[in-house]
Amino acid sequence: MSKQDFSIDKHAWSPSLIPGPIVLVSTVDADGIPNVAPKSWVQMVAFDPPTLMFSGTKGNPTENNIEATACFGINVVSEAMLPSVVECLRWRGPERIKKAGWTMESARKISSPLVEDSPAHIECTLDRTLEMGSGFIVFGRIVAASIDGHIADAPIEERYRLLEQTCFLEDGIYTVIRDSVGY
Image (cartoon, rainbow, N blue to C red; front, side, top):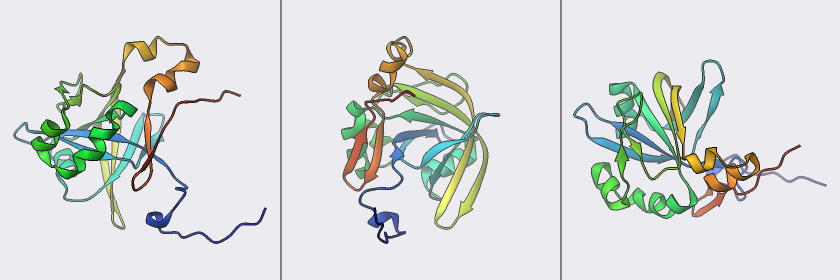
């Protein structure tokens, strides 16, 4: 099968060559005011110590809060949450949380809150940041994780379907992970 040239500009990718799992990064500022921001450039970078990264923008409230408090939450976005996540981009700060209708809850090991509506959470402490081109990469050490009990207790072949994790493909197009394939 022959290949043809494809743009290196991700904005032009259709289909997306690198789908991104959608998460809500939850933080708190120095005054205790919570903030939630959707992100889709997130992934594991090390097993030991367990470390993940996400790419954001230097100077945005989320990244500023993380630098000030040295922690953040990763909240998995399920299919049921996706409409409010897409819509929330219209608002900022506490207004975003209120208008999206999310309920915040305390984390177990960090000062940042978590989005209760999320089926799974990862709590992180800041390891380091890195500026690369237009990106601002945040590395977080995973210090706690939690998942809804009905997902954890389900047979392994059902867990991804129940999690309903969403991924960003390109502007206005998303997918839900429903199937898993074992080999």
